[in-house]
Length: 121
Image (cartoon, rainbow, N blue to C red):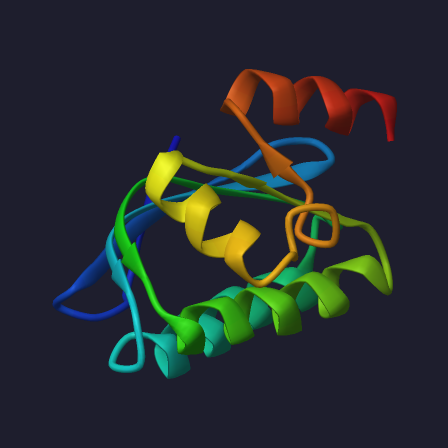
């Protein structure tokens, strides 16, 4: 069962917790306005566990440099204990590739692919 996340007016989402992973489905804008709340809320859940994290950004409309910075910080936090995978859309992928972070941020084409990787982890 997905629980709603308390983020910002421009960034909304849900969190699902399964045996060994957390799935966050986000919509809206990941920008300078929403980034501090996003980083704090997701960071807290990463620390609480489960240790494998999937961020579904396939419904995100816009990511700026603040959002990318938050994704890098969250990836580092998650990698200390488990994994973080990011499901993207063309817009998000293009932004991430501009700064050459596609390998580091473990971009995935779908939630199904990310779930398959989680089972193998």
